[in-house]
Image 1 (cartoon, rainbow, N blue to C red):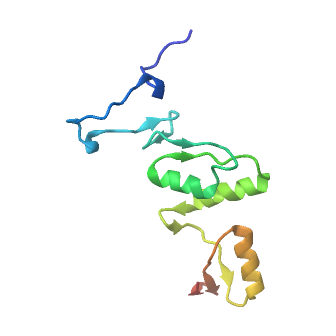
Image 2: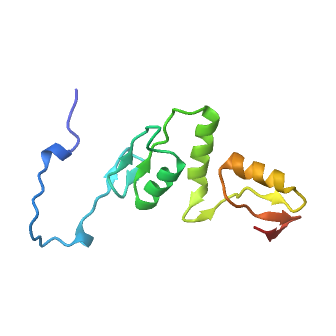
Image 3: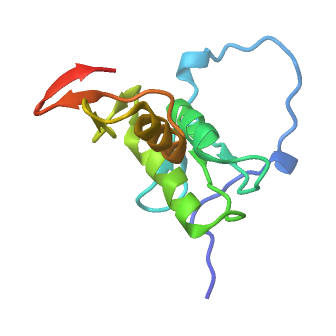
Length: 132
């Protein structure tokens, strides 16, 4: 038997009129629960459309507390790359960065950057950083 877990409203259930309010913005909570394990800080999820959501938008949505759904109008390999890019991005810090050896050619560097859709990468010499 179906039961209502809790009352919920959609956009059609609410009409907002411009007026003075005694409610302060910092007192308003927009957190939404998507599943038992996933909650969002803002109730926004981007569409999984090829003209809408790829890694760049998914990262921006996550930074603001929302969710970006990577579309499936691409190869599985490219989908995996897009998801990896989102998962690697963390507040401007890249965990497990893609690096290149100091003795690599510029051609190698350009190929790796193009393949991974990045504009720069650490150059390593042995176990240390040689440059970017």
